[in-house]
Every structure is written in C-alpha cells, then in structure tokens.
Image 1: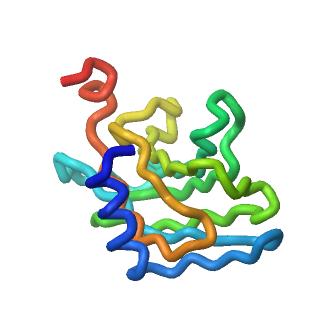
Image 2: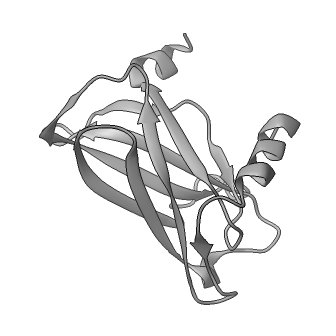
Length: 138
C-alpha cells in the first residue's frame, strides 16, 4: 500500500461508523461512486462489495454484500462481517463492482483494492470505473 493511500485511510477513518468486537460482528459502511456518472435504470444492475483478506490471496471473501442500484449516485452500502474471521496482522481491502442483473457481467469495478482496517472507523468511498478500462489497463 502506498504511503499516500495509507495516510488518506488514517485521515478518513474518523468520519464513518464501523463497529466491531474482537470476536463479535462488525460493520463497515461507505459509498460507491463511479465515473462516468451514467444513469442506471432501476432493476437492471446491482452493486456488489467484498471484504478481502489481502494477506491470503485466493481465499473466499471474508464478507460480501449486494444490493440493487438505480437512480442517483453515490450509492450507500453496509457490509457486515464476523469479527472472529479477522486476523490481527492481516491486511484487508474492499472491492466493488456493479453487475448487470440479467447477465451477471461486471460493467463497473474498483481499479484498485481499497484498504480498510476492520474494527477501526473507516470512511470508505469506493470509486468504480468501466470494467473494460480496468481489464485493458487504459
């Protein structure tokens, strides 16, 4: 993680509620935005957010949430997780994408994983870009 992203995480961490206990449930809340800001018709897409253990790649997500989208951005989200699944020395990230409901195809996605610290206050803003741009590296 670069130093600027870490510094931003620390500065933003006092702005949004996250609750947890060492072995109890926890919650991370935030917003999803995307560029370009194209309107999504209600009932055609859903936002999917995953909490990932970046120290153990390849494992299933620690927690996931999905909800229908349509209308205005930003899109508020809340992801609940089991605090007993959080390992103290691991690094955790959020990933998000907006998928077409009919096909399941991701149309927008985070270009980079967004670092979070479960159990700390995290003000999370996930900015999505067109999935084709991410795949081609443009």
